[in-house]
Image (tube, rainbow, N blue to C red; front, side, top):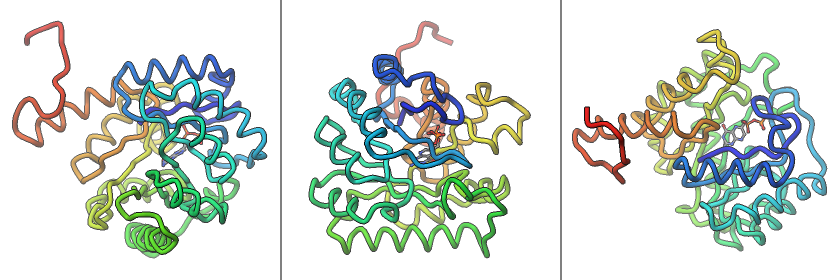
Length: 271
Ligand code: HH2
C-alpha cells in the first residue's frame, strides 16, 4: 500500500503533493513501483495535528482519487463518512479509518452499504494528545481486545467480516517500546483471523532507533516490514515502495523456501 498524502502538514511528506496533479503523478509512480493499493489521505494524523474540515478534505482528496482510479486499487484514508462517500463515488474501493469507526457514526453504515473493504486501526486518544504519556497494562493484549471489539462492532453493523482488515496503529499513542512489542508479538494479533495492515513507514520510533531523519528511514522501514511479514502481516503501508517491495520479496521467498513466490520480478543481473 503506497501512501499518497494530499496535505500541507504530513510528518514526512507534508506539502509535497498538495497540488492534485503532483499527487496523481506520485501515486502513478508508486503504482509503477509495485504498490497494489494507493492510500489517498487529505488529513494528517501525525502527533499534535488538528482535524481538517470535511469540505477541505473533500477538495484535496476527490480529484486525486478520480485521477488515480484504474491505476491501482484506491483506498481513502479518512474517518469522515462524507469524504469516504465522495471518494468511493470517485473510484476508491477501500476505506482506511484510523479511528476504527469511532470518529463518524455514519461511516460504518456507508462501508456496509457499499460492500467495500476497510481497515480498522487502533489509536489511543486522538492525534492531538495521543503521544502524551501513553500507558497500557499489556500493549498487545489491550490492542488485541480493542481490535476484536471493533471487528465485532463492524460486523454487528452489517459489514461482512471478510471485508475487514485490522491494524495495530504503530505510532498512534505508543512509545518506542510499545511499537517494538507490538511488532515482535504481531502473531498474537494475526490470531484474530483477519488480514493485518501495518504502517511503520518512516515513523519516529525508527528515527529514535537509528538516529536518522525522516527522509532517510527507508531501510529501517523495510526491516520492520520484513519482521511484520514473518509474524503474519499482509498489507504494508509505505512511502518508499521499491525498498520495501524488494525486502518483502526476498523475505517472502526465504520464508517459502523456494522461488518464485508470487510474480517474479525482472532483474538485470544473474548473480
Ligand atoms: N499511519 C498514518 C496514517 N494512516 N493508516 C493505517 N491504517 N495505519 C497507519 O499506521 C497509518 C495510517 C500516518 O502516516 P502518514 O500518512 O505518512 O502521516 P500523516 O498522518 O502525518 O499524514
